[in-house]
Image (tube, rainbow, N blue to C red; front, side, top):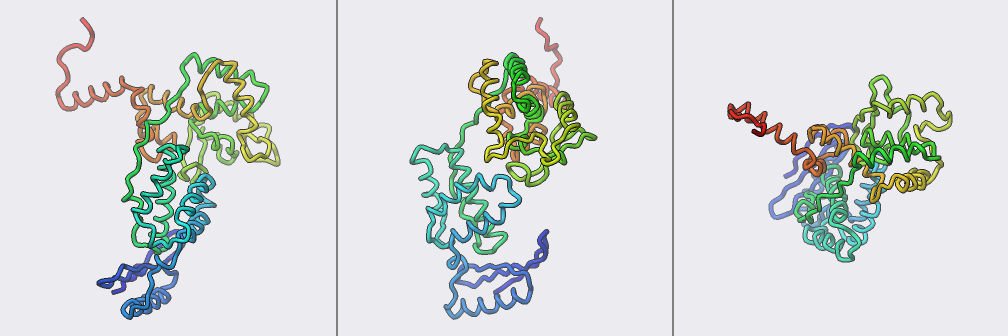
Length: 355
């Protein structure tokens, strides 16, 4: 029996048809017009009963889905280009296969192969699987090509806690001085903005003047302008605010970027030499530009700022990503315990100070 559900979203109204007949797999499809939905439902139900119907999951290939999904995310997802190697791998693994053939067992086998050459970490393999899952979810929710995403039934590998390298107070002082002395005029302001806001490298290098709100002392990253596509607001205070105000007085009329650099495929490339030289002068080993983001998060955590607020500044979608810094604030954990004990009426009757 066919059911038709009306759905209204930002792209307008659509009609999802679902056909369930005993002894046959469920069939779904989406249409922009109700008349088309009714016609397809009637024709498909008749074909199924007469044994003439081949499900849409059997008619559509994975490669066809991957192409359609990548086209859909290209305009609004910042990390779309980063995902191209992921889909190249999955398209190669599922070459010529229909969506019906992409089962949990097949996905699990292909996922296991990601580790076999030793070139990819567990975290990287999990990113590949996440891209595949998003693509198949698109087939379920947006296209109605398949009934169920097989990826949630595939066990992911356990990732390490992740690298947490941040500047000590002495390292920070030396590196600030080294960047300020650099012959590259853009290094110091880029460095200060990155360190003060926890912004990603690409977010700093692609920052536009219309994202800077001097009145509210914030940088506004809108949806689609971040790595994960979710917008957020960054604090703009202290020397970072002063530096941007000074830069705003003399802007490039032909380039609205806050930090205009030569047109290259790698915007950070023009700073890389100066950055490495500054690290050498400051004697700061094993430190990457991305570690400025870790430094901002670590300092916020050590100042007693909660994980929810740190995650909001950094743009983490899950608290698991922020949890790596939790060990840096044991004093805050004790403070929270004291608050709970007070609220429960179980506070210590003795002084906490040593005798």
